[in-house]
Image 1 (cartoon, rainbow, N blue to C red):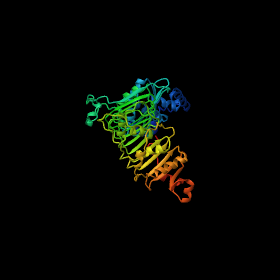
Image 2: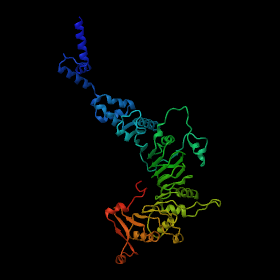
Image 3: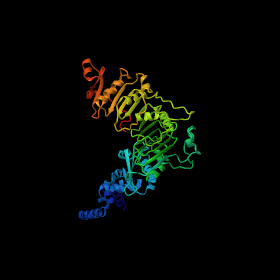
Image 4: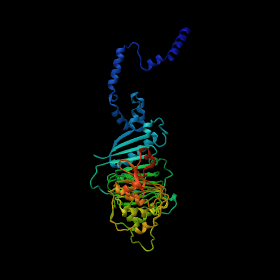
Length: 508
């Protein structure tokens, strides 16, 4: 009896350590079952698995509709499902009403934070690099409109609205103002910084997902979606950069935000009539479009692009608008400016109260200037020299001739201002770009030689990227060209990278 018990125990221990026995037990292996019977069972099981027969793109779409954790758990179903969730979570497709956009963006940011796009994935550390670099939400909110939201690294969010475009879009306003302030202190300009932070309830434990966004791009916002966008703007409390682009129908923009915002870009919003900015930390402002009514408070810009080559966006121009613009760009180191804006805002004498002193028209810190004009003649060159007198530290000058640029009627003569123009000894490079005839280049270069030093390089660039450099030549060539001491000589391709450079605002 004892011997039989010992043999039985020994057999059980051997089966316990036998991997074949474990495999048979897991698969309900029956040695009496024939191979054909087992094959029939597998085929029957596969025939009932309808979802696995679907193509990968359909499965990825299904996964994108699941909650975040359930989507990740699908990777344990089988080998085929192991990587489907990764691509499925990269682009999410949803639908709803315009009023649901705010909540959907909040959920989208919250899930992205859990996936590690902002904090490195504290909860889901195994997220692939594919998702960590880019994630999208495709949200349909009407019959022909949808929102494509894209998150990339470093807390950047793109909100691109696609709606039907109308020839005469409905006007709308955008307002960015925090929800909670002490009274009406947002109307003031000189208060301690701590007064302008929103009031936070100490009993609140939830963290807003909007706080992870550092850079925001708003593209093609319309009257239909402006309410949802205004609601979201008040939530971006850590935003450092804001871009508003191609918003048809945007009539006025008001920013009353005393926080971390340091860069503001407004591009091609052609219906914008009023721009009001109260955000004292903004030092980089890029604008391209029609000149709006401009009120920027106490801005002191370091990098300014005021590209109003399309002309004025309204009829009434007062000294308040010009003074605000001049004060904002007076401390700039990098500047883009149109000639007509210079003449309209800075040279035209407008009536003002006797007690109000005109702003100081000086640019002592300016290092890099892009000057936009619509033609080349003595009057336009005189206007340029009148401006250069105020830029003693200028190092790089880019002259861009755009025939489509707005040109105002000429009423000002610059003979007195140009006659005493001193040489710009700090000017290193002058680059001529845009649409210019050969005679225009020669006239401009000949006039520039009167105000630049011998060390200044004068370069001309064509649309075909051909480069010419102004060089001193011998007397025999001077007679043929009709210029004093200098002529344009084409540069070899090897020397182009050393001579030519792009202005900071060219590729916008």
